[in-house]
Image 1 (cartoon, rainbow, N blue to C red):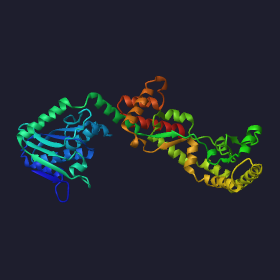
Image 2: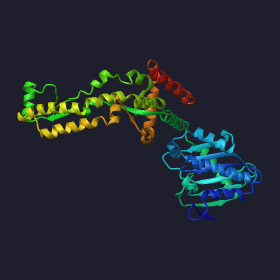
Image 3: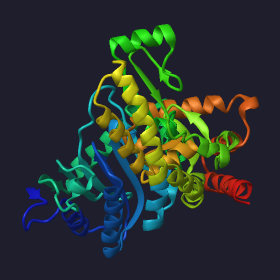
Image 4: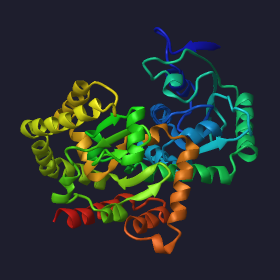
Length: 429
C-alpha cells in the first residue's frame, strides 16, 4: 500500500524504512542494505545506514554489507572524499570498510532517476523493498526541517526482492562508471582537499601614491602647450591629463623595509590559474605579521598626512593650479580640485586595509573554490601538477607539494605544518 510521507503528522520516509525492518522478522540473520538514488548527501547516507543498523539490532539481525548506487552526475558534484565517507560510516556502525561501497551509475547522457531501498537476508532472501520518490537526501528521508513530500510503497514479496537484486547486479556489471571517470573524481577530490588547505591571492599592481595622486584635466590649449614646451614640470602626462603625487607616499618604503620580500613569496607560495596559492598556516602568519608590524608604516603616513603638512601642500598646489587656470591650461574649478584632493589625503590614513595591501602587494581572494566549477578546479590542479614535474622548479613549497600529491595527501597536514614552522623561524626570528 502506498503512503505519503514527510508531512504534517505523518511518518517520515526513514520511519517507514525502520518500521519495515521490524516487520520483516529477520530472526538473527545477516542482511545486505541496498540504496538506489539519483541524488544523495552525506548526512542522509550516514543516517540511513545507522538507523537501519540499529533497527536490525533490535530484532537480533546483523548488517553485513551496504551498497549505495548513485547517478554519476550527482556523485561527480560531491566535494567530499568518498573513502573518508566510507570510513566514517564504518566507524559509526562497526562494519568493515570493504563491506561498504558507493557505486556511481553512468547511463551516458541520461539521468539515473531511480529511488528505491532494499534490505535482504543473505541466506533466506527475506527482507523488504521500498519503491519511492524520495532520494537519499535529508529532504528525501524526511530529516530536514523543510523536507519534500514523498510517496513510498513497501513490499516483502520474495519475487520483487529477487528482481530488485537482479537489477542491482545489472547496474553494477553494465552501468557502473568507468575507472577513468572514477579516477577523475578521485583527482577532483584530491585537488579540493589540497587547495582548500590554503588561500588564494591576486597580486595588486597599485601603489600608495595612486590613492592620493593629484590629477588635472587639460584644455586643448594645455594639451598643445604640453606637446610643444613640456610646461608641467613634476607632473606625469598622457594625452588628456597630468598627474603627480604631492605627498610622495612611496618614500615610506625607502625608510621602512617591506615586511615580506619577494623571496618569501617564491619560497612559500605557488602560481595557479586561480591566483597565488599559500598554505593557510602561512596565510595566517602573513595576517599576524601585518597586524603587528604595519604600525610603523601607519605612523609615517599619519605624519605625512598631518594637518600641518597638508596645509602647506594645499597652499603649494593651489598656487600652481591658479596659474594653470589663468593660462587656460586646465579644466575645472580650482577650489573643488584642491579641496577634493585635500579631503582624500586627510582620510587616507584611516584606510588601513589599503595600506596593508600596499605593503605586501597581495590581496586575498575569499572563498574562490566555492564558486569555481569542477572543470576549473581540475584544470588548476593539473597545471600545478605539471609545474611540479620540472625538477628545477621543485624547491620550497613546490617540493612539499610534490610529496603531498604523490602520497594522495596522506601527509598533507604534516607537510604544511613543517612549511609554516620553517616560515615562522625564518621571518619572525
